[in-house]
Image (cartoon, rainbow, N blue to C red):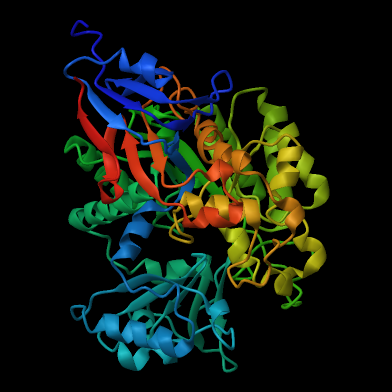
Length: 555
């Protein structure tokens, strides 16, 4: 072979699930210049190799396209890896002890953040207060989030630094939880979080880069080669995402950015991108910008998701719209402006009323701005009225969903919304049956980034408490093939990158994953035990578990 046609890498002897309908399965892949140049049987692919070609023996293992997580908060996730770990704390006592132990390792004045606590794992399941941790954190302000990211706990020092007192007024689109005397308990929900976050110092470049690299390692260990970074919440969201995008660029320049990133900015600040002429997918193979994200409401766990009917266990409220949706005409004007600037739009919506309202706005946009390939998305699409499910396909709206939430929230969701509304919660099968495009993600830091956990969740719906062995709302289970498609082709389509990735076929980026088990021929219950043996990005091995793959130079 001449220098121009030399194949850099071949991977042979595999069971390759291509996601290419014209060639569903294969044995081998050839790579040149980070892209796939051939897919076929091992004998044919071996003929493409010469003395300089690297050969990877897949050892008859299952290979799938690199997973594309359609919804992550990448910096937050990486930052959380180095912070106090509260997700699996099973009581108030353990929660307090972990914060106390971590505080002893921190310099005086250092903020303790992230955490990811979940009071639903405690008995009784009640919200923590600042009094629980004040005496063990006298020198460190604490600002730790609930696992859904929509509710935070501040200690007394953090509230003092933020100037929060009994006289602090409530915030539109947010909640300051108070005791019977009107004093803040330390819990802040949604828009009220800004009251504290405005005084937290921004991270340094070194802290940003360290968090990204930690997040990247976690992603690659789990076979995630692409992530769609949904950024931050609150008034600092745009500035924080700009800091992180600069970090991505620094790491890319140093050849350290191995995961592919699509980064979104807040819809309300779309003009910052529009003024520069930036449109969707401005960038390169590793980093693109030009898409925006909005919020319609809060979360189920924080009782800030927006429903038509009150919560079953909190009948005094039905949740409410987000701060930006409180002025729907302004939010719509921003959608129109972003759309005309060539910026694709995604909107977080949890409650049934939030989802219906966003579908209405999207339908209005389609009617008033004409036909276009907009890739409109609803992030989470969590609780839907039956009559709204067909509207996703009819309006070409992508349901960007996170299946792990189903087996997590399923432990307690019916306590909050009752059985009837739960029937169309995480309605993956109903959405697929209606013709909707599903894009799968994790919502990490909120849930693990592990696609095996997501596929397990979507195919079994077995809740984390073990109380639904046959699945919670089992009629909404989907197949392994459907789940893998949503994690690869569906997610690539959702970011307008389906011509570049999502399947293993000629011309696409050489991103693929070698698994320890054949998920298509396993009982789905066993999928959560399957590991990633090898992750390849652009034909480069970026993660290898226990040196499971063997490689050599062709003879």
